Image 1 (cartoon, helix red, strand yellow):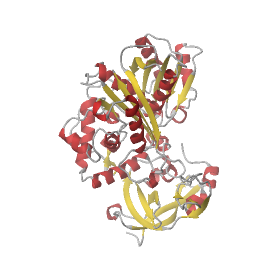
Image 2 (tube, one colour; image 1 turned 60 degrees about the vertical axis):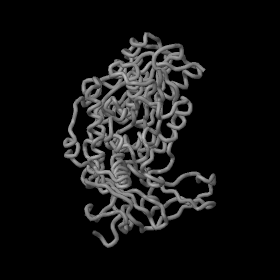
Image 3 (cartoon, helix red, strand yellow; image 1 turned 180 degrees about the vertical axis):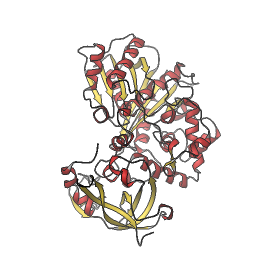
Image 4 (cartoon, helix red, strand yellow; image 1 turned 30 degrees about the horizontal axis):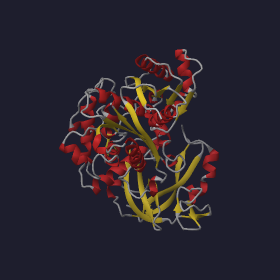
Length: 134
Length: 368
């Protein structure tokens, strides 16, 4: 079950490239992934881009991966709290795992996520890296 | 409303059944459960997580009945990921309570070994948000690792404390004739196993296995193990937006409702089968179920034998995905009456069946 659907990828590009989240116009709650209705009951939601800096909450180095990630393993998977308080999970790159620690300053980067061989589709999205590199 | 009794049951040996199709093992186990119950059924609920993805089959229930020549019986497929088993038991229970049906069978079945291990990772990762988690390479294992790391820090445990979970599971599972890995292990085996997603090692994972379990439930019986209550709840918070990472919220709420309906408390529980697809989930489950205080599961395990997962849990009995919840129901019922398992000292048992990383949980209270 590889991720080979072009329509699915295409329609999610705003979220994958620019971290487009949904904010409730009434109470200000921010949802990522986006939701259809705010927990306050309002359906008046607007698209907002999430900030591109934050701090590392926790991370792990993952050695068992799915078919699309065999060439990239191990993956560093982490939880990052962005500067507006919204947390996002994702891959961490450009980092040595043993030098990472909770609280480290992180930034969003635009990277290749899945590549379907040499001549097939390349799909992109956000990842995180330590500010200044480690 | 009428009470719901377990009239008969059967379990299939957990393992790698390369020589059998998925409908074969489901039909075999259903046939044995029907013989055990000496009853006819008027509906079949099939719990399965991955029949389309791993086994390329839909409407599985109809093919299971075809294999047995059972005609004109309604079939329903229930899919809640690895929590499918509990969800199917819940629907069967409601069908019997409403008296729409009098005797029904619940068959849980999955055969993950029909695909390669990396494809199993793909399929299991589909229990997460497929567009925002699976797409980026995140898997349930990596989330379990994050939760384990935070738990060990917050409650000041060492990894060795967590590794005791696998040791306990294997000591329980060694006596379960249907378990995948029926042997004792030492702490060194667990702590020296390969790192799969630090801090978690290979022995923190419940191995995926092929399996099938069948329970025949009737509302006309008057004796034997009885389902006292069933409750299912969902955690709608995305993983990244959860207020903390040491509560299984779907379980917490399902347990509250199930205990209330059964009019018992966690203190009355003599045996519990919880969803420990990863060791840390078992630890969090006994706490969110209310069996021990928050942060106290590993200390309780050190102090004595927790009456949890006497089957061996996912680590030793195996993780049969959507089938597991049905295994758990049968195990708890049999532990209460001393069939196939040593009889427990008490009258109440609970089952916790979970789909995804705390996405949906079903709790079943079983009593004598």
